[in-house]
Length: 393
Image: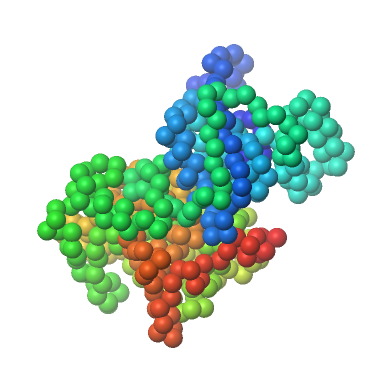
């Protein structure tokens, strides 16, 4: 994540790290640097997760394994430091050694935010400007020279999206999720297919949980997890999930009790700002209670599904779903019985949990019925970026 702050750094293998610790020299090939130009600004309904999943898909298609990716352009000025950190932290998923944002005004703002001495900040800023390493976006600087063709993304074109069902770079626009999932159902087994026979496409299985009968179908959500790592390092998307939960509870919406729900932030800082903003109680009411801190569902530590659920999935040969805000969704990683695993922003994790299925069309289908018996659509409870930023500030 430090790469989003303008600090050059990347992970190395254990043997290399030990060698350096013991005073040995290591050599490396000077990496190619791929330029990724950002313009415009994100639309009000999109999140940093939508942006990063879009970038992952583009960079995977380009092929950046073993390379540095440097993000530049006027669009960078419209991204918060936490948004940049989210992109930088996903570098393993798009295959790059590092995803880097040069030092600019945002970096200096961060130093003031953490209470750095003003004299030291002035020295850092003056040095970087003297060395030509300080980026400004007023058109006064020439763009650097990069390896190969420069990639470009207009941030205003980014739309809500998820990735899956089996790989982090298989991006799916939320508006096309239903059609994509239905296509995967009958496609041959692969990254985008489950090979469900035509006669079994409408299969279902019933089970009893806590004295109530429920029915599972293909696409039913059985795991819903706001995990640590990439997304929970970003207060905006975390608070957006909390604000969505608040709006849902106030409308009288609930989640299915058999869905295994969890919130596992990266640190207690997340818990603190959730409490200060007052949204933690609404997440609790929907079942997203804090299960602990650090990697959990994303690395397969979701634990057992509720009693009866396993048998129903197996007996019905169902392609059920897990929706999580992590960065890994390879088949069998999240849970052996969830064939469809989608990476999504924390608010979308809450949304799909409220819907109870991943094959919903949020544009035309209600997410549920409120306490007044009226249909509630996702657009009715979705908090905009402006509302979220108001709470963050």
